[in-house]
Length: 588
Ligand SMILES: [Zn+2]
Image (cartoon, rainbow, N blue to C red; front, side):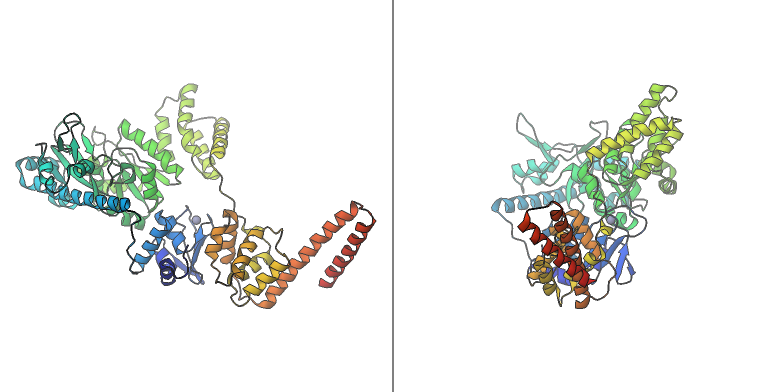
């Protein structure tokens, strides 16, 4: 973690956790602290708390907590060095250039930036083709026919890859080696003859950027009846399709602000939605959603409206994406657009025919995913027992993925009503499914906050914060082994070691050494309302622990006496018992 004197430590000292967290979470001042809705779990009332004084955060709902770096690491799903960089940049602190670790790494980094540069050049080339060639003009007519005006074409960088077969190759080959051209995914190699040629030919091109806005790939749509209709860049050193969501670079601010994302299938859909002014839309680009894409989305919101095509492939993709999103604890709604005339409508067609307002209205009314699924199940034949069973089997896997037991139960009732099923039978199936789920998924450790006694909580707080006497207090506790056998023993042990070191104690660093359950408890204690600690109070807490220790010892001695040991030993035990009873009487 942030070592003393390190860059990370310096940044942490200058950074204000409230400001950094405030960029992700709407915070409200409540007393000394700030609170808001937790970005790590779904909640309606704020249990996420940030302390400007301690420079830490803690969620009483899900138990996440830590310092500004822990927060950024969780939020951006990144490692510590990256989190330091992010915080430094947010606070306007210059980041020292990181040395690349090895020559290979340097070479790879170099190769990646050359490939990005090559994509930029290809982009310029494609745009020029659309503007300035005959072929390009035909492509333009096609786009206009799809309702894309000049502004939109410019805004989304739409271009044209000519039919020649080597136009882009000729444009690039003087500048880049054959090897690099092959690795870019822009140029393909004929397997038998080894000849190079353009991957995209006679296609409208859409530049695909990663979430930080670097152009890393292209999507291309055939103009005529060429197959496949959509062709994307292959996997390259700079592009992996499961890691990228189309339009994410421009959508992320809107997604964060509105706290939901609209997920569509293709880039034409994303463009159709985005150009109406709805910025928080991303496309999974044909393939159904992959887990890294969901993780990427999860950095900005946990709420998604899925609006895939209404055809069978789109339905399958919707259902597969649903399962994945639910697994990742997303709140999902599904927008299934009604047909326009007799045509099934994707977002592109719907907005073109019905207008943006109609789309927006349906978007607002998009039902929760279970309603969508029930509607799908109702399309099945429910007149026979067999059909009903099929419908239940279709629904079960989704219901099973609902983490919340109460919600699961509510859905069970609704499903039973909607499908006219016998509720007990359905519930039996559900609870079996839930049991299966429990065996798969590790249950969250429960909150244990209330378990520790007030005295222990108070002492823990003092060890963490009482600059004036924590070391002496740690000595007392350590010498008399006063925390041995307590439920909070591990927290005490970690804090005592930290206090005895003479260095300032960082609760987050102590927390990092603890198991989840203890770490949560420590954070809860750190956020409790408490008065300035005094030495007198510390000593009265110590006395309480001594008393507890004596009671316990007395019980042990009594047990040994009852075992009736031989003379010498018995005498020793009786003396010990006398002494303990005197001590306890004196304490009273
Ligand atoms: Zn939380």
